Image (tube, rainbow, N blue to C red; front, side):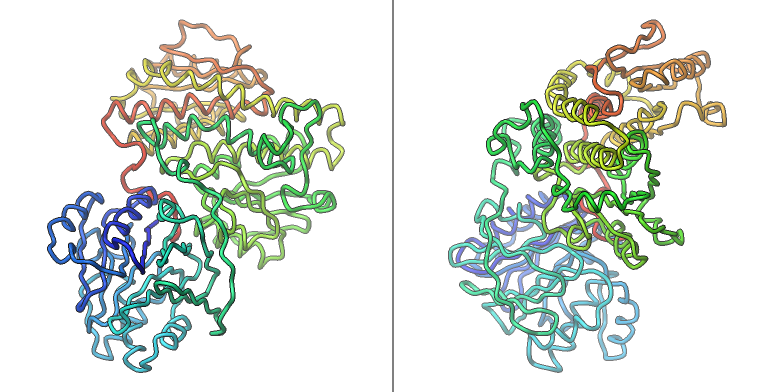
Length: 625
């Protein structure tokens, strides 16, 4: 949610800010703006897509002047509706300070009352305007910028990443963060600031991660970092692992399409990473070897850590929550260890009871998901060991957790996850396999066989990429539907939840996923003539029962479609359309079933004239509760 960019130094500040905001569009937003350092500050804001801001900037004569410093922002509304007055950057009442903000100030009402008592008035409905006025209040009192920022840091409750300019300091860009992402890039005679390295990757790969509760000052040639105790920290820069090709669409029409097609590679990379190999070249072709072996160290754990696990609690949101249900099914089947899956947003409020030996696994693509981060902190407070499965190194959830497994999806730009979800599935399989092996629930031969089957998955995922066009007839049948129902049992139900979410996210069609066996307990009342129903059929032991449920809805007028696995027989006349994925071990079938469902949502979105990369009202990284 929300994207921050900042720049100071030699360069075309306006264009650098706008280019950075373009790279952050995936985070989700409903308004945008920039502030350029001048006397007074030059501010331009716009509601809607970034193109509206670019038009206003191009038409503003003040913006055409040379500037050496500026900040920008894409806003996802939390406090106050999407409007120009609520858009960032926000200017203090006396116009001495301007800032952009990602996060949420929890005690903003209390602080606003205090500032009003001091004579401050407010033009917006945002918590951010409270923050900028609080900074100005302390600055007018202390006349020392760093002292001011440390004073404000003590007052603010909640999460924030700020990029700040002061009218009296024309050469320095300031920043501070708590529980919201922020990263610095070092260029030639310039520094960049952003929520995500992708915002400035076209300019530099040299980076400085910003730790929690740190305050920064950036000028053309210098960076100064201070910890929460106001002590200056010496830190070396690092080289970002990403490259430009990973943040560009290339020949693909959309990032979502590109990321679907990247799944064979990223799943293989995740499998190799779990063998302590970073990629195929360094692995000595480990993926093709006769005896690939997964490592405890890939989870930053030991065999003893696995032995001590008596129960597992998975906490996650959205697609990661669905990946948790797959992990539950696979882990309980293989390791015979009970697994409970909970929505991260509900975890703290359900008065959780964690038993001795219970491992709490958090799953998050960004590693910054606010609900999941809060749940991890709560689990640790209750004495549990925590493992995070995340896609971003050094992210907040990764740092907060005792153990971490990094999926190898690379940057995922489209809001609707595809490749990150597939890597989360792979991570769940690997964890379950290691736990089953440690607990002695599967033999060495079974371990080897299942591991080899996992290494066959990337090739089978590659085969499923042909569904790109094969799914079109089904997509055309479904694009005008008002409601679509997904049915499955066991693992198929877990995958159907993800299929329903994908279609909801980017086609705006109401979709629901139901366990097939629950139909007769109420849901079947929703079925009427022409109701589209998509059945998932990959579990041989449950296929007969699922087909019986399909017959139930068909007899009531439903129009049925099927996604099956090779070896599952169906009567073609029962279905208006069907697709078959290659055969694999039933526990891993989800990695193949999800491909046609991803293509289906993508194609329906295109047929309806929507942008699948930027669905309305959604943000990629949900950094506020």
